[in-house]
Image (cartoon, rainbow, N blue to C red; front, top):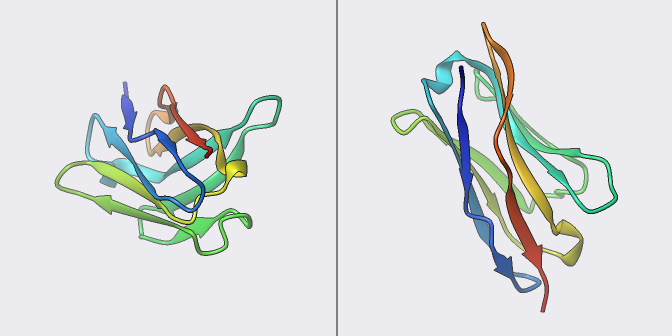
Length: 116
């Protein structure tokens, strides 16, 4: 069973930056995709960014160059570097991974709050 552990959520002022981390329990080479979703209160969960095993990245339209997804194979960790944060980025951010054999897994979520 895959375990994903997120960290890095915090309260930050508008225009600030945060880096979220998602540590997987096994080699991230076994994941077809890894990425981040977010869910704000009373809103649907939406895709933020994902990376394929080949290294292709995709971002939600609202990201507009502000976020960068990266990975560290030695640490089995995927990072989401977020800059120029806006109040509308406030949400619970969830790590998602699709394992080539066991399918879909989710982390427990980490709260990001952008407020002055």
